Every structure is written in structure tokens, then in C-alpha cells.
Amino acid sequence: MKARIISTIPETVLSYNIGDKKEALEKAAASLNMRHTEIPLDKAGESLGFLAGYNGFASNGTAVSAEGECVIFSGISGKRLDMLLKAMRGTGLNIPLKAVVTAHNQSQSVVWLLEELAKEHEAVTKAKGGR
Image 1 (tube, helix red, strand yellow):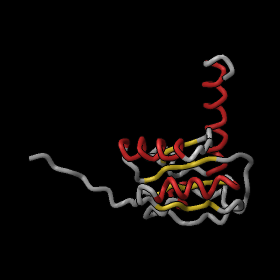
Image 2 (cartoon, rainbow, N blue to C red):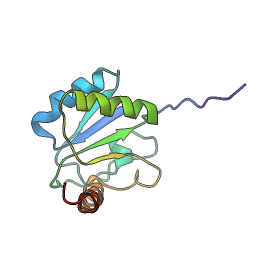
Image 3 (cartoon, helix red, strand yellow):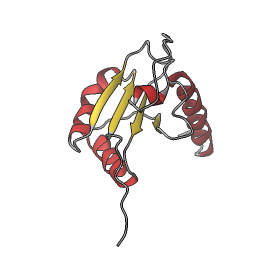
Image 4 (tube, helix red, strand yellow):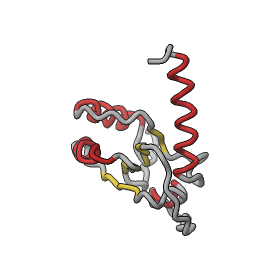
């Protein structure tokens, strides 16, 4: 018999600075019974672990905002993430910067994440010939 590890982290879609795209994102998340949490603009200095509600993370009290928009996935398996991305495309939602909360980045801030995602997005866009 195979053992299954069941995640205690709820499937959560976090968004930062997505403006009028919020409704479409909430619709896509709700279609899969996932919760959506909008990160307040002045909380970009907080850690991803805190914003995702992970145990052991507390607010650092940093009130800063950042440029850019992104979607951050927490507690979502690969198969479920594929389903969510398909649902997002189905609503016509286009948010190029996306990330998953990992052991590597959970202590990092949204500001850091946006900078990293922007670098990666630029590198991929250049590699594809500017598309």
C-alpha cells in the first residue's frame, strides 16, 4: 500500500496589484474550490510564508509597496495547478508573473519575488525572440 501525504496547507491563490483582473482570478480559483487572498499593496515587504498563512511566520511590520503584478500559488499540487492555469486561460486572464511558494522563497518578500520574476520573464522573452 502506498502512503499518501496530505498537505495541511490550504490551496490558496494570492494576488498582488492585479486591479480589475481580480474578479476573473477569483472565478478561476472558485471553480476549483480554491481560496483567493488579495495581498494589500502596502504589504509587499512581508514574507510569502506570512502572507500565505504558514505556521511560524509573523508579520515583520514592513509597510512598503512595489511595482508590478503577480499571482502566487500556495499549497497547490502540480495537477491542480495545471487545472487552475487552464481555468485562468479560460477566463482570458493574462498575468505573466506567477510563482509558487516554496521552501526556498517562503522567507522572501513580495518585493524580492517581483524582482526575480521580472528578471526571469525578461530572460525567457529574450530567449523566445521578444514575443
